[in-house]
Length: 311
Image 1 (cartoon, rainbow, N blue to C red):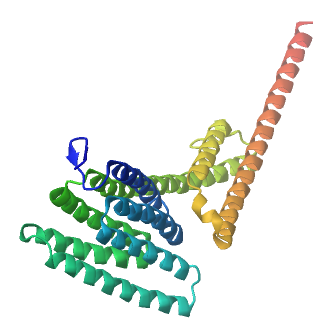
Image 2: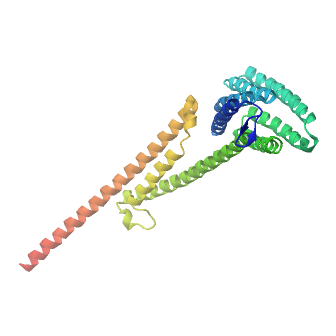
Image 3: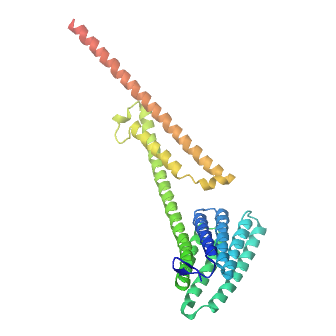
């Protein structure tokens, strides 16, 4: 029997190495799939990862697990097709396929539980429940269900794989899913934080613009007014607002026409607000220049008057 890094393997060494390469591809596409908020993009990339997962088991000679992975590919691609159109027929087909997928998954899982060693049967039962929840999560429209259930499912499979098989690649695959979902929520929280900061900054800029505009109407310099930012400070705030706008753009939404239209309208609204700020700042600068010109003229007048008195 061949060995790899001191571990006994049940297939030829070259098949085992190819299987590990397939496992690396599985990790990559699994990790990538959970970064997509769009359900169809997630399902498409997830199905590619499941294809490499299936190939990994084929090269390892595990027919049962290869069939499980093959059904994962089939399930993902069927739902990818079903969710392409939001019609009553597609919705009905999606529900029917969900019931079929749950029945197949339940049957396979029960068979696995029955044939499991009594010492680890509890792990198979936990994996059974979490697997069914994961299937339901893939069907549900919210981006959160599939990720929450995927974490529970990955933890169950990870524990079962480590205790029963000590399969290092299997552990890494499941751990990468958990890490990917954690990264997804970190980035989601970061973007939500930026959006909150952006709204606060916009409100502050609008308030300061109103104050500055009132000063402009009265011909008062902003520097001379109490409780108002100077044009230079306001310009810095506007520059920061632009950076936050760029940081919060959801590029994934730009693929659909309706969502792209909404993003464009939001961008146009921001451009309009920036134009308003620019107009107010330009008027403030004009007032400042006018005041400086008046001061210069007055100084010259005083100087000439002093010269006349001296003569």
